[in-house]
Structure formats: C-alpha cells, structure tokens
Length: 370
Image 1 (cartoon, rainbow, N blue to C red):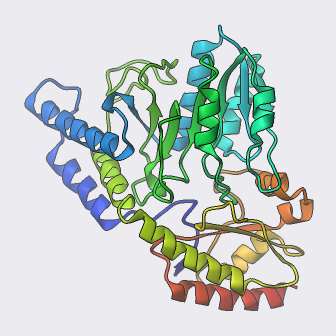
Image 2: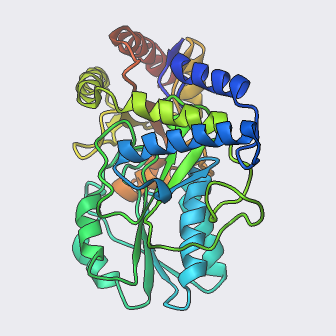
Image 3: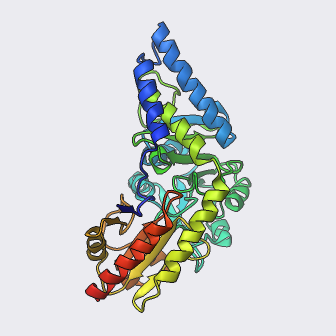
C-alpha cells in the first residue's frame, strides 16, 4: 500500500497504541472518583498534562481536552463569541479555513454576529494592512489557521498575534491541527489554539484546546466534573496519556523530518510536469502537502484510478463538502483548477520508493484519462 493522505489522518504509532492499551488495563478507575483507583487515574492525567504543557511551553491550567480539533475549534469560536458578545459581535477569518471553522461562524451569523474575511495576497498569505483596516472596537475574535490543510499555506501567526496585542478586547484563535509536528510552534502571541491527536500518529477521539489562563469561555458541554470547568465529561485517561506520548514522539527530530519530507516534495514536483497538471502549492507552503490540479479529469476519477494500484490520496479535506475546492479557488481564482484539485500529503514515514511508485502509476492513469 502507498498511503499519501497523511493530512487526512495518520496511522497510530505502535508506541502510542501500547501506551493506550497499558493505561486502559492498569488504570480502570474514573479520574473523578475519590477512591484509590480514581486517584491513580487522575495522577496519570496530571502527568500527561504536565508533559504536554512542557512540550508546548504553556501552563497546565491552559490545557482543555476535547474529542479533537473540530470540537476545539467550535469551543474556541462559540465560547469566545457567547462569553464576550457584550463587547462586540465582529469576527475576522480567512477564505482558507477548515469546515469546523466555517460551521460555527455560520451559526453565529444567524445569531447576529458579523463575519469578515481578510484579504490575502497571490500566495494566500494574510494581508496585514487589510487586517488592520477590518479591526474595530467591535472585533472580539480573529480566527486564522496556521497551515491550510488542502494547500499547505503557512500564515504569519506571530506577526498577526503581535498586531492583535494592540486590541485588548480581541482574542486570537489559531487552528494548529496541521502545524503540530510539522513546523515549530510558538504560542507566545496566541490566545487559543486547536490540536488533534490523529494528525500526529495518535488515536482518533482526543484533542485539545489551548486557552490562555486569563480568558474565559462559555462551555459547549455543561454538567459533570472533569479536568476543567470549560468542558464537562469523564476524562478519557488512556486517550489523554496516548495523546501526550504522540506529541512527544512527533516533536522529536522535527528539523530532520522536515528536511527529509522537503526532499520527497521536490521529487514529486519534478515528476509531475505535464501539460494539464498545475501545482497549486507554492513556496510559502509546508512540504508535507502538495496540491495539484489535473485539468480535464474529475478528481474522484483520478483518485479511484490510483486506488486500483493501492495508492491513496485525497481530493479535498476529508471533512469538506461540495465538488469544488474553496481554498484552491481562493488562491488561483480558477474554477477549473478548483474543480480538479488533488491533495498528496507526505510523512516522515513515506519512502522514496513510494514516491517513485506513485509517479509511475500516475503517469499510467494520466495517459489513460486524457
């Protein structure tokens, strides 16, 4: 099997799975229980939270466990909006966000909130001057993803965060789902950030929201003791422990992994020089993602043609709806490229032989379909 869809999800690593199994078997108590078994489970969660806080250079009290980034994104956006709506009802985002950003924003628009989309340049990078123009005394939230999941565009999060420090009524949320384990992360100028374990070789069903200590939120889930007042529910001890393990492993040798994946990305680009193939990812993108358009071929047709050779890529993000990529259109302003885009996503687990095999079979499929 040649798996090239790591941005959609990653295979769970053996070490992470072993941690999950061991904790599941040994620590059976409810972490909220007062007896010995509950205390032991709670200690595991505390140790895991301490490890995560050290890895991200944040406080333990700033970690809120969730079911994944979709919940984290909803919690950040709805939580801020509903808590601070007395200050204003204006939110700013981009045209390159995940559907779990647009979903809660659409919901809030129906509740009377105004949402503006900041302009981006030819590379998809946020126009800082336009962001300044959009900011008002009514702006309570700016939500911008660090890395676009379809194309791989990297946004200047630090620069944006420094700008927003001048607006104390406005909070800065960053969807870091596609950034963790791929590039270095600095949360100094970020107020809220979303993460998910299944993007870093962890188990599906666990993620977290980083929330700066002095910020409050209106919870999505009420009722019941948990690790924080902002998200009720019985803490998932084994999932939390496995998440900490996954985070520690993915952040090991980060530079070496980046260099290797960059080499694979170049191999792909060099091998995809066809008349009808357009490279949508640019020099401001992470090497883990290469978005292309095969104009004249429906993306699902190419996907299934490659699938016959046991090769797996994707058309848009796994959570997207519709037949045309909003992100590719926002970048290229070309409907044909937006309707025919494919995403190839790489990992440090990807082998050079995988790339060679993909290019060989892509050539066969290309000639058959065009």
